[in-house]
Image 1 (tube, helix red, strand yellow):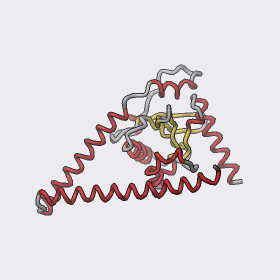
Image 2 (cartoon, one colour):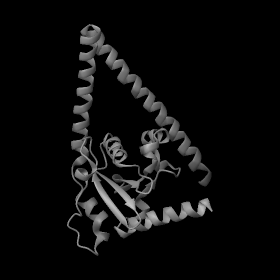
Image 3 (spheres, rainbow, N blue to C red):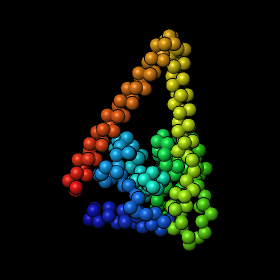
Image 4 (spheres, rainbow, N blue to C red):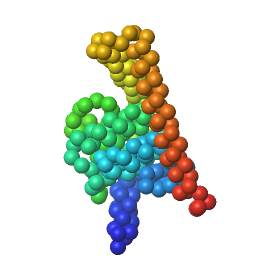
Length: 215
């Protein structure tokens, strides 16, 4: 019975995407195993420990590049959760859109690190006439903005600001000398990088082990 309900939910989700012109072969569901999920290993690792991300169901790719991260609207918590997801996927610097999927309805949002409320981040209906919703995903793919580059510039700016702030705080609050402050912040950043790489390898190994029995 549970599997029947789950299958119905997936079918309904897919039907809504098709209604807006999605090619279901380009949808990567995060609850399936496979090498095609390896580019999302770090995100999947975060998803496993963050309850808010339970609603993050998958990603729609256009020409093998992330275009729209997909959220199951039926699992989505109130507004703060949506902004949390928007900001998290923005840190990747690739897909420019977040799509909230509910039965028969797709709502699109900008992927960004800003603190705008969801209502402000919502994307209008792209001037697509009623009854021609199937043009939505092709339109998004063909009109894809240069968001990835802009996001990376923004992320770089945010990271540099955080590093500078951390160094200044060590110097002013804890009287740590300049060189030592820079060294401490650099070591902390490198340690986090190693932790993320370790988690990515762990998730990648799990994906391969789940995928291999079927091939």
